[in-house]
Length: 211
Length: 319
Image 1 (cartoon, chains in turn cyan, red):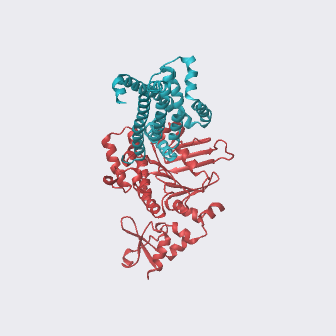
Image 2 (tube, chains in turn brown, orange):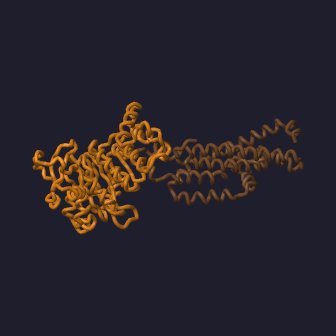
Image 3 (tube, chains in turn cyan, blue):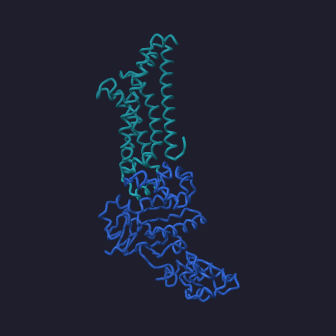
């Protein structure tokens, strides 16, 4: 087991970093889309009732099928991988952004508005702080699922830890299977822990509690 | 438009989208500067709608609102609201900010200097009875309901607005603390001479606090007058049944000694041992003093502790 790492550590580190890269970019792009979209949908129920089912349908497409579908459109490699992962991420992210903003006590908004805060002041000083714990919760769940699904992206030449795992499966190489699994799981557990600490901090902040 | 009136409503109506009836219907009102005016009515009578049209949280369907002679539709809503204090029932304190940060909200938006804001926070917390050293750094969840509303009041007063709008501010507070807060807001209003428009569904509160009371029903003002006048001369059956003006004992609770006392007195002739009370004391309490003492009068003192009159059973009868 240890021998495998000793002989291949350069490859393993490269693939590990690639996996982080895919996750990071997918999540980043998804957050940039989901934040304004979620805010918009939290204020417009009609739009939400149209957009949310679409995101739900995307979410139910099996990942392998999704990757295959994207190949004729954008080819192989990193691009279709990130595109698919962004599409998967949107449902949970948007839903949590909406839930975060809808969970704000209306009295707080009324008081803020009544005191003469502008829409932007209200948004950045009050609403965002209040919604943040739920938003980070969404990012945490999404990050874990992106790390998992990104493994499959190795099928379309996107690289990442899936390369080790599937190579091991094809060649019945136990050390490769075990290391591939351990590294993916370890990454997911670490990211989950890190984000749950952030989430707890944001929650304490929004309630005015010491952390 | 004379400057004497702090708030003027001219033919204000408000019909909400998809509503069959208007919430407020063709209402004219003039609120004098420095007056404490309460708006009394059942839920759904339009009192909160009326209040929220003053700071443009709602826009009237027709009619005009003026504050200090200025048409509010010509002032941007945010600028207008920064000039008007606003207190609501659930306090709406920002949970993630300390007491001092909450109070500093509007002064900071207005770009006051740090020093000035700091001094203002101390001044205001003192005013509402929360020692600054102890309370400045606390978060809202570390305060009782009554204390939270004191912070809400301090926050609304922060930029020294001449007009305060209060929407059932003590509605969620227990009876004992409510009574204490009512006395405090009366003291504060006297001290600062603000114009206050105060919505409540509590008859006792409306009559106790208001220099004048607006009684609303079904979107219309039923009567706008002093508490005493409303009790003595209810404008219609609705007002009559609302304030129980037939109930003499109830009425005595709202008539103050200062309103009816005999001012033509010779302090020398009054006994040292005769019971004493204040101008603000209700006749109900005066009556209790009378029956529990051997004297036939109660001495009334003003705020400076000077003897200003007496009340006998005759004055009480006339009320």
